[in-house]
Image (cartoon, rainbow, N blue to C red; front, side, top):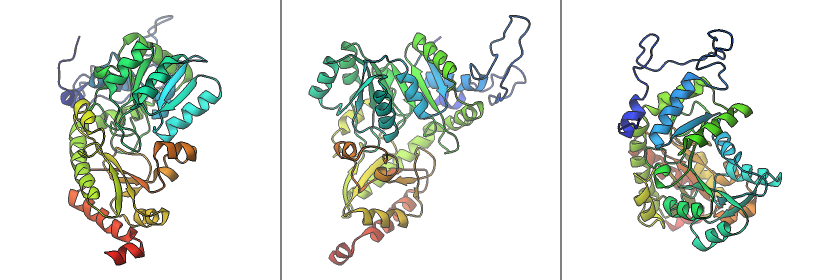
Length: 394
């Protein structure tokens, strides 16, 4: 039966008040590894938690409803979620991936391809000619999108790329970690699979590691669940419980965070120490109109480039007080990361240059703090980052 509730209601209330055992309002956590058989050759709905777990199933059901999918598989990390999608591929089949994807994704694809498990091509998916070439040569099987991209916030037209991919016989998977279903639903735009690092916005509190794949087709969801059981990458019940609890506040969190991010982007865009700001919410962003069309908001992630070099970057990250220098994103706290030495450090330097990830690029995950405090922190850090020549010029 189709769930007619709004996404906000699904996030806040799915599973609430449905405990059949004791009538608990909040869905309980089931930490048991094993479940009793009713008798010989009479297993119940659950037998072993690697295979199925009630808490994990509750999270999967909520995710599937939020993304408009037919089923979801909850796994141990975002990378496990991407690897689960890659398990569908055979040697010689091609993955068409973004050239500016997350460093961990780039590493996984490169190492799997080096083992001969599939072929991968990294391209600018906004270049229609290059995309068509990738889809009309070799054996294209999967188009993997990451939109907005990490860390340059490039936006890909999901519907347009999905049409091209399916015409070539390739499935489409979209990493929706940066926006969450609060702001984007790729399945409605033509995706076959949606990928999440549930560590990020879905959990929202930086206290678990997890991942998920949502499938548009029930058969695909069942096949992925079976393979996750075979390989043992299914997520832990406690992490599923924490993620579900975090998702209760997904929509109000994201709304406030993206409002703060918009103010941060506008502030940085006006600073002389800043060379460029990458945020789809700025009208000057090259994909602003695409983002406005396929997203319900512009999100709370952005990146910017400082003028100068690594010394200016070092002074800036050492000066911030509210933004914390750390990897990850999507939590209630604001973070700053230096992709070249952190999230994308394992990416080949030439690949980083091709993607546009410079040594002066910084990525911000904007949290729930006061807008004024965030802007004040950035202002004082930018002053600290100035070179002596810039300071004298001002």
